[in-house]
Image (cartoon, rainbow, N blue to C red):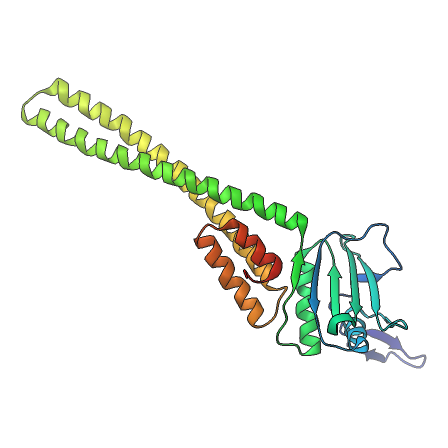
Length: 263
């Protein structure tokens, strides 16, 4: 808003102007990188290069022109965190587009925004995010560890529960027989076992919370991988990833995230 006061009086004029910032306006164009981003997502898209350039103009507020061979190269740097972003389009093989950025979140947002702008309802892609996959592998290892600890704690608590029942029966028998010494001994042992059970329960509760947090990270990674696709391919990634987790097939899980399908 701007305010203006005339020379002849105290009358203020307010001028309003609405301007919608492009979704990726925090990315500024650059000519080249010293080092290309290692991660990328590639896909086939049947589009003219000028339509891709139009999408870039609307989403990044920048003008990109195709060269004589009808290819398009655009490079950006994020003002927020310095993230490098490269977008390359070539008409070869019916149209191929590659997005390079070391962030699966940013690539997913770009894929969704592009498909929405170009009105594409179906899109399959090949993802390659080495660092993200390595971090995801560590998360899956944590899930296995937490599950192993959970099973171990459950078995130990079951054994202790059986011991509690046996001690209660022995203590009651000793009370009926008026054997106070034995009764005190049984209740003392019962107190120790009960205290151990409480400690095991706290361990199990903490392990359960950590397991839930790890599973949330797994689910978040599946959602990120799904956003690299559109339509049936997106749904297929989610379904096959969850089936792979249920069957504990970690190798196929990474293949699904990378290729979008198992076969």
